[in-house]
Length: 373
Image (tube, rainbow, N blue to C red; front, side, top):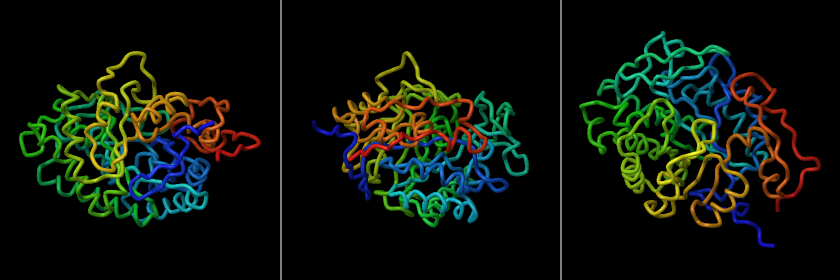
């Protein structure tokens, strides 16, 4: 019987992946404190899942102002880079490959998480309407943010460049720019969250400018073949709205082509946050953007995939690889389970965010572990 393409190698930019199953970025809020520094616990978690063709780390703030959740590991200090070395060494020793996801939450934060208790920053002084987990079990309403001054934006872009350089020091195989899920870069894209009148607001070309400047900065550190970007055309999380979603993201995909990125990582419209939707707008599904992608840039589809949908998505050519999130939380050996169509462990939502080892590194493996070759 022919092996489904999902379980076969893939050339992704500069990397050859052993399979087309990607571990999606999963916020888990278990960094060492003080300092939001990765620890041996985080290294164990990622090493357990190293059979993924590619791991994309949890979203990782690029600056002190980029944090919006308690205990999220950062990538803006040398100590954090040293902590991430524990993770990359563990994954590489287990034969895996790992990208770091670069993140700034923008307005999805709270004063309690900002340096000196300052307001979060955003494209415009428009609140998200959401809440931030500022400590275990404590949520606070996100305030009206402070609009970034035009003169501050070059420093913000340089924060991405600096974080990308620290990711190299930490030993990653590449980086993914987080421009999805209602965080800062998507806030600039939104004609609802962004009402600026300078060169970063107004027209679609202006609203996409920051994302393209960030991509230029990151690909100046890493070659494009070691950089990916995550987009969520249908996203409403974080209060994000767009008058013309399809037009916005078609423009973005076209403008990203000259960077010759390793991949575009698109979130399917059938998911919102960490839950599946019964009804959704299929016109924003990832495969509708595939025809716009040029060169060797790959397409990764993420969001609510099963074994069957993952196999079908790759076999049909709708995407080159498939990212799994919640199933990787509960199944560190997900690749083996999918390859052999073995039963999956059920995930426990109550342990998704924060805590220690329970619900993090204690999910059982198959016994005995089957070969996936």
